Length: 124
Image (cartoon, rainbow, N blue to C red; front, side):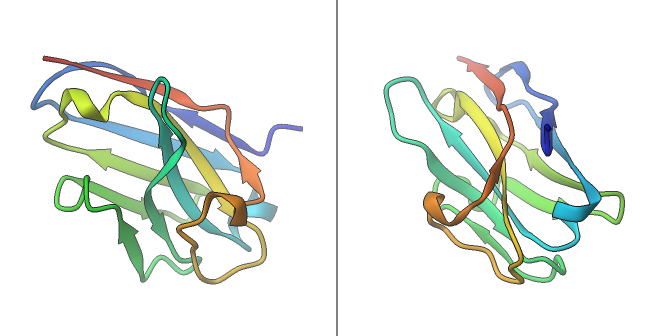
């Protein structure tokens, strides 16, 4: 049973913008802190941004601070708005849920559910 479904990836020129969405089941979304991770070719998966269950607190990796915005709504969806995209942002982006937790984690292994990923490619 698919629990998290990402969408919104694609090809964009450097300096452009994309907005990723992650639709979650209500059971997971209402009980979980959420995160966005990315994995570039040949590299390890890394955290990009995270948000608490109530949406009040957020975290951003240094590489995306000031360019990306994570948010969540009351329709079981978490978003990642990405501006000023650069070629180094090219990666598969994954949505993840930290089950039963108010607070996010920056550690990949703390997340219980993962989406299938969506490709983001930024051309120079």
